[in-house]
Length: 277
Length: 277
Image (cartoon, rainbow over all chains, first blue to last red; front, side):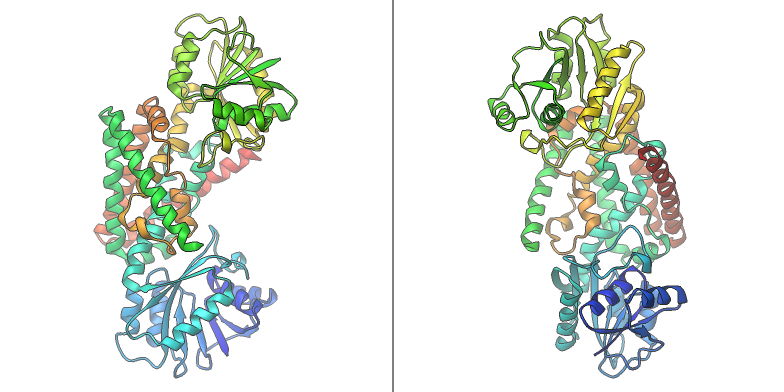
């Protein structure tokens, strides 16, 4: 089985490194030489690929726009399995299924990453124990889907979740996309610019992901605009209630708001823990 | 030196445990028997205290209202050092300095904690490497201040920061208080109620502290109402800009907003790292 991974950023290079560590033959395709050479030197890839044409399995670890371009116009082998790792899935499926394809598409989204990016942040253990979402469509080829699941297990993922692209995009708006906006907005407070010594875990957690790659996240946001806007509007509305409680000097209302959040958090956390057991 | 710690929650019992591990004699004062017995069994305290009258140093590890009551009406030895650990400092100073006192007050705020509370979450190592803020006032007794700093080093704190109560209360509104409101409000999204498998580190960080003790935090918030309201209004206003960018389909604006936040975050993070070096 010849595997080609296109895009040697943190995710793509970690796909290479973890699959190669599991004994697979993996070729890397990348525009820049630097990442390719780094991946070769560190044993993440067996060699360079310049085409997808002889690959049995292709992973596209690229930004959404380039992923869609590749899925629409690149040349793949008949029956090749082509998986992407994009953080949004609906628009990608729209491109793939807009006409008949000679390849078999499987959508994935690894719930793994770091605050840093690029090949130097990659590792063979990045996915260990992490969640992987796989999206299903009525046109999904079952054998291809199963092959990608098997590879995901080899990469070290701890939990595989299957859902539709629509469910994925709705959930991801709150579990990932909005979190990056909030962290980014939080870090802008004037008082936060000079608060060394005043910060504990709460502030660090709240702002850890504030340093987003603005080009990539803007793309992701506008590929999931309606869902994200819905969640952002919801959060602004909810925060407004705490603001009103403070402005109106209403301690009872504040306590009720916090209690409601605590109970929802405790309940949903238990559900999540059950799943990852 | 006889030390009495009043309130054997996570912070109070950790003050006991860390000071006792450093060789001090420490007595615990607590309304409930359960925490006292747990602290005795685990060697966090030498014994029970029922009064502050023979203590050279008293730590009040109590909610703001009870802290203020004790500072105003409890009986302390002449010249005793009395330190509190409350998350707000201005109102506490107002009470202490509202009339002459026979004790010497020092305000502290440990930047340490966990998502859990109570004596069972305490440990001798909770403060290891953490920040401690100490507040100074024109009436602060220098010797008492120095003694509390020495004890803080013995407790394991890694960085001691001195400032006025006013500066403390302003900074803490963004570095701690608002973070708890945001986490609490974030966790309330309908989609977050059932998102097992969809969550990675971003969501976990964003909601880790959502399960606040609503009674204590409501108190803290209303003891720092103006500062917190200012920060909350600021955040809601900033989030509104991202919402507008989405609603107006303005990718350039979104990218600018994210870039601005990333740069501020990177710059302020460097400043903070310099301090904790």
